[in-house]
Length: 137
Image (cartoon, rainbow, N blue to C red; front, side):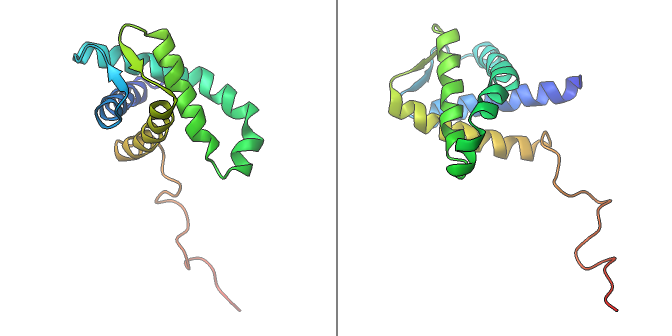
């Protein structure tokens, strides 16, 4: 296991939770302390590592049919599980904040993981660039 990757992913999850709780009304981190965000980030990271792939596997046809919009619902389910597992630290006040939070945290995780280099690039320097290596005869 790559520990640096796990630490960066945990920090990006914590930052995503903090921004989501700040932006979305109805999602609250009860104790606004760094330790609370780190605990929430670790639990969300474990949920995303173990539970989310299972849910995505079983909802794969729905993900394709909905052009990926079901992923927002899956992220909302992960937030629901987080609130259920951490009732004294993380609260969600209803279904609408849960769905909006699923959308926001999904976007934030994607942006932050790309920004901090957690997600590998689709193309790297060793791949053939467009137009190079292709010759017409």
